[in-house]
Amino acid sequence: MGLWAARRMRHSRRLRRFQAPVFLLTSALPMNHEPLVAFIRELADASSRVILPFYGSRDMGLELKSDDSPVTRADRGAEQVMREMIARRFPDHGIVGEEFGTERGDAEFVWVLDPVDGTKSFVLGVPLFGTLIGLLHEGRPLLGCIHQPVLRQLMIGDGKVTTLNDRPVRVRPCARLSEASLLTTDPLHPAKYQNGSGFEALSRSVRLYRGFGDCYGYLLLSSGWVDVMVDPIVNPWDLLPLVPILEGAGAALTDWQGRPANHAGATSAIACAPELHAEVLRLLNP
Image 1 (cartoon, rainbow, N blue to C red):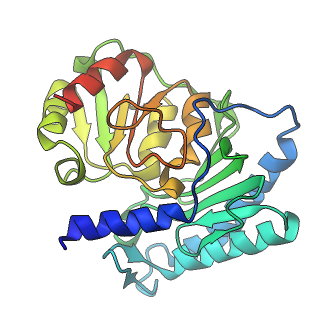
Image 2: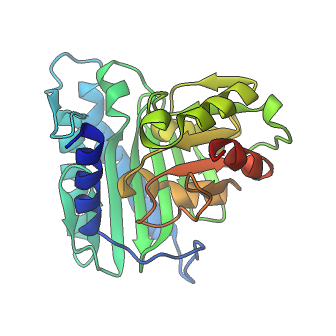
Image 3: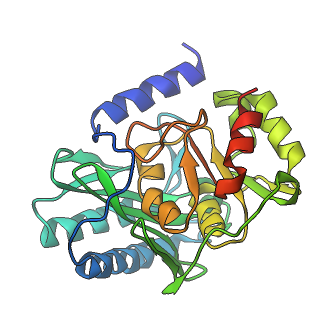
């Protein structure tokens, strides 16, 4: 079995442990979100206290997982701290995390955690990583957070409004791809997991293309610094916390083929200024 096939099999097995229902729209609940948002801030603060001592350290405990992706003491320690806090505050809630799997994935409320999204950047001392925290209600993305502790940036979205350090932010208007900036997490991944020639055509059509992303690319998109962010392969913990952020910032979000990507079954993501979406899709799927 080739490496790509093995990765797809592992991805499918992990995803089957957590299959939230598919919903086409994020729907805010008729409730006061502020206590939940306050708790997200607590989670972000607590996880950063675990992560920051390992950032730029030679003693981060770097290991390779079965899929050859890196993991560190920061990843595992930060997720463990957040899981313990959730269990104490909300014992009936479920948790899905990259490092320690799923607990009560069918609960009414489920937290989705990626303690260090962008571990490859983290281990190189590059501050283009972040902690992803999401909350689902009956499978629907309700709240999402990107926390970049080195740069002290905290982005929170509820599907209607997105803020960066408590200030509302939006995707910037961009009418033409020739004026757009494009990001992707890994420039080798489009050819490996989707359509390399389509991505090459897209990258030639924009004004500026850079090969850094992970959650920080979505933060830059949602705060109006770039216009297109694409990922040819994602896991639920990579994507679900981003959904309320992107929707609150006014971004278009689909998978690589243009299908809804605001649910646990999505395995790729295209996020961009709405007026660019049709052309991005056309180029990626020749």
